[in-house]
Image 1 (tube, rainbow, N blue to C red):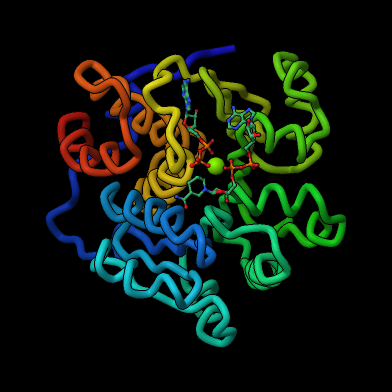
Image 2: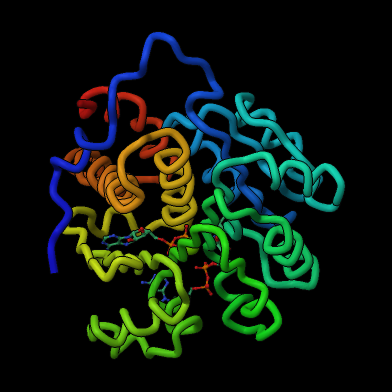
Length: 281
Ligand SMILES: NC(=O)C1=CN([C@@H]2O[C@H](COP(=O)(O)OP(=O)(O)OC[C@H]3O[C@@H](n4cnc5c(N)ncnc54)[C@H](O)[C@@H]3O)[C@@H](O)[C@H]2O)[C@@H](O)CC1
Ligand SMILES: Nc1ncnc2c1ncn2[C@@H]1O[C@H](COP(=O)(O)OP(=O)(O)O)[C@@H](O)[C@H]1O
Ligand SMILES: [Mg+2]
C-alpha cells in the first residue's frame, strides 16, 4: 500500500488565478448540527471557509443561527427544516457534507432523505458522523444513497464497523475493507492512527502523518470541511484532491504538536490559510 507524501500538496494546491472570483472556488453546503451539536457543523463550515471554498452555507437547526453567524460570518445559514430553501441549496452546490453533529433521531433521518433525494450526478457527497451511523442502521437509507454522485464516506473505526460489519479488531485486513468499500460503490476514508483511503479505482493510500495530539472531539468534523473545500476549488484528479486534504489536516496537526500537547480542531482551522500559502505550487 502506497503512503501519501508531501509532494501531493504542490500537485493540488495552486496559486489563485488573478482573473477569479468567489464562484471560481466552488460552493459547499454543510448539513449537520442538531441543537446539541451545533459546534460540529460550525467546525466543518469554518474549515471549509479557511481552506478556500468560495461560498459556504450551513444547513443546520434554527437554534444554531446566532452561533453560526457570529463564529463564521463568511458563511450563510439555512434552517434544514425549511424544505424549499434547503432543497434549492442542495441543488446549487458542488460539494455537500452530510452528518457532522446531525444526531440520530427522526429529524436527522428526514434531513438525510432530503439530501439523498436531491443530489445530482455532478456533485460530491461526503457522508460523515451521524449520517454514517444512520445509513448503517437503516436499510431504507442505505437503499436511498445516491448512485449518481461521487460519494465519500469518512468513518472512524466504530462507524466503519457499523457500516461494513467488519469488527474493529479485523480492520487491519485491507482486502476485506476494500471489498466492503467497493460494494458501497464509494470512496472510503477509514480514519484512525494512520488513516487509509480506499478509492473506487482500486488504489489504497495510507496516511503516515498525524498523531494523538489530534484526539479531540471535532477533529473529524474539521476534516470534512477541508475535504469539501479542496474538492470544490481545485482541478487535480479526484483522488489527488482527497489525498491533499487528508494530508493537510494531519500535517498541520503534526506541526502544531511540536509546541502543543493537544491540537484543537480550531487550531488547525486557524492555520489552514498560512499552511496552504506555504505549500502551494
Ligand atoms: N462539538 C460537537 O458538536 C461534536 C459533535 N460530534 C458529533 O457527534 C456525533 C457522534 O459521533 P461520535 O464519533 O462522537 O460517536 P460514535 O458513537 O459514533 O462513536 C464513538 C464510539 O466509537 C468508539 N471508537 C472506536 N474506535 C474509534 C476511533 N478510531 N475513533 C473514534 N471513535 C472510536 C469510541 O470508543 C466510542 O464508543 C457525530 O455526528 C459527530 O460529528 C463529535 O464530532 C464530537 C464533537
Ligand atoms: N492518535 C491519532 N493519530 C492520528 N490521527 C488521529 C488520532 N486520533 C484522532 N485522529 C484523527 O482525528 C480525526 C477524528 O475523527 P472523528 O473520530 O470522526 O472525530 P469527531 O467526530 O469528534 O470530529 C480523524 O481524522 C483521525 O484520523
Ligand atoms: Mg466524526
